[in-house]
Length: 449
Ligand code: GLN
Image (cartoon, rainbow, N blue to C red; front, top):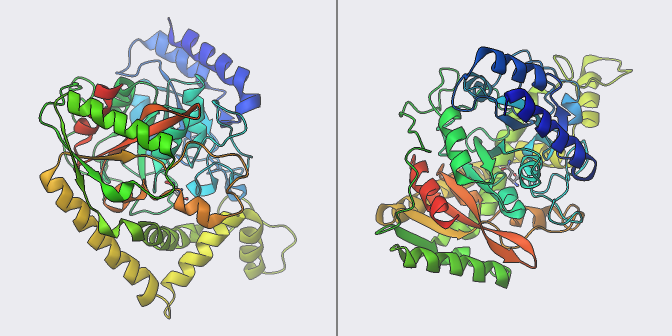
């Protein structure tokens, strides 16, 4: 199979399913030319000729990048995110840009300016979010691999809802340069595929230090794929009892228990632990993430790029009208919440308090990982919910993230791997590892696959 043939096949798959699924915001019309070039030049790297879909909050030189927002509806980047340069060097083909919640704020893709994506398992349900387009594109067979980003669960929750594998690496493992910032202390780029092996290959390509991102780690990048192994003997697994939320679907719990039993049979030990501060994780996350977002989103002013309001009388109206018309309501809610939490009168009670509780929570997670190799539990409390079910109830939507937020607050690597069905819909087992122990996370997922 040539790169050109594979790319054309992938485009056919995308076109055949796109009407139903709405997973792509932009399909790359230069993909076939890129593939031809690879066929002509010969093998370029470990991903030579492999089409990969890219979440549309990762900037791509010469390919429209919108973050699913009206405010960036026409934004044509003049540079590549570092992960795109790395994929390009490895020979991967950018097949197009996938749908997401606006600025990655959401858990369902319903806040996208370009309309919701749809879950390929059941068209009446959400694919999760915010990387819902990437997840549904992989699950439906449109593409083999997709990049996502994960600030509070946006790779793992849609991976769980679509019955695929998704991994968020350790904070600092992958460069954030050129990733449209949401909450800079939490954001990470990761990979979504059906097979663990394929995520391992892509992760080795995109990981590594970058001079453009001071938070990216100098640690050497392992060949995750070559080092994959299924040996779980002696692996110590901690299961926080607080992960067994009230309201978690019984079939989800049964499936997670079944997965834990299989690990025991493979020679792992499974023990219950406690993370008492988990009950505050959602509040802490939404205060911190919104505060960082309110600061990061100041740059969209209608002057330099993106949407600009018409018929304005002065510069102030230009700012106000461009932002009022350009941002959707969920993004505005976060900007207001964050601006408030950072304001002089509220800072101590909200931002500072949330940062302090985050520190306490990180200590709890770190303590558990002193005695255990992995933390496991469900990725989500329920399978994919219905389109429209939570979109008008922000608190219900936020609570949905309780099980994925911990790994972001603590900067830990975490994945979701398929673990059975609930009411005919996929369930995900979440696997959290020690800092930079992506290999252990991948291995445990590989062992279950
Ligand atoms: N659902 C969470 C939020 O709305 C997480 C989003 C993400 O990880 N990008 O903030």
